[in-house]
Length: 342
Ligand code: 5GP
Ligand code: MN
Image (cartoon, rainbow, N blue to C red; front, side):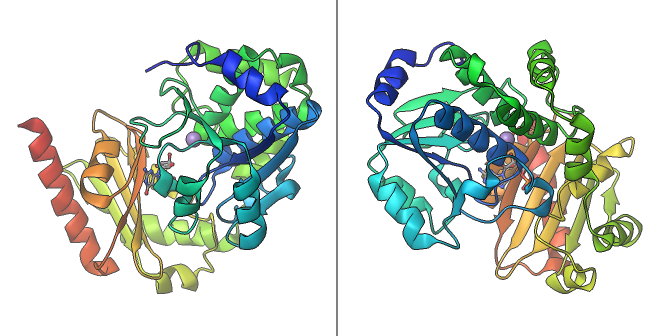
């Protein structure tokens, strides 16, 4: 699905020329891509002297705190009144890196749904569900940040891609592609990355901040995960690991520490899908990764009220304790594979 060239540029230009109040929103538990896409667009609008606000449903992890303009984010979870006033007043709302109301999180989702603003979605996940007035959705790009770059270009704002915009967008592409290893087979991704690098950004510093900035506990937890907890079913070609809250607490596990862990079992030859389940207060947060033909987006949607991409998706599991969850997940996966084959 490619809509890059198809969106109504004239409509967006008209809306913005009327000097409207603009808000930019990312998804719940925003990752590097969501934050970067939003902060980059925010920077462009600031250069265009627009009245623009930046909102995130919930907090961001330590690794992405250095992205330019993060200091301007209003967090709905922390500053509910302020954020909801912004939603009540905004006239144009950009939704970045998500395509369903529920991805704004349980608390913000109804506010978003009720928001009367003209909504413009810029996203790269399959099967858009949200009622946006303009949908710019493309699953062939590496990241929402890459798509934001394309939109900036299409709208004639390339000269506003300054060092801050470049640093943001490069971080977004870098995080969503796991440092240019997945989701980046398009030559255009590298052309864009080259253009962003040419803006004088420090790629090595960004890499260090994003990938080498974890706690000691997270690495020790990784050892425990790989040595003691990773269950491999060779027939189904999957790896499953499930952790209670207590196990995470034992290692001082913090928000964002799970990033990247689920990818590790995929380095094993013959393991095609990896599942990681982390216990939260009243549910298990599930992460799915695939390196082959198995579509984990469909798996997550079908069984776990989740979604994502073909090769990276997430969901939630309620009312199942961490220990029995391992077997439960293996059984659901077997059921899914069987139904896909038939
Ligand atoms: P992660 O495993 O890193 O949390 O998520 C992987 C991918 O799946 C990301 O693209 C994320 O946006 C998406 N994702 C994670 N959880 C959910 C969910 O509950 N619903 C949907 N629709 N997508 C999700
Ligand atoms: Mn993304």
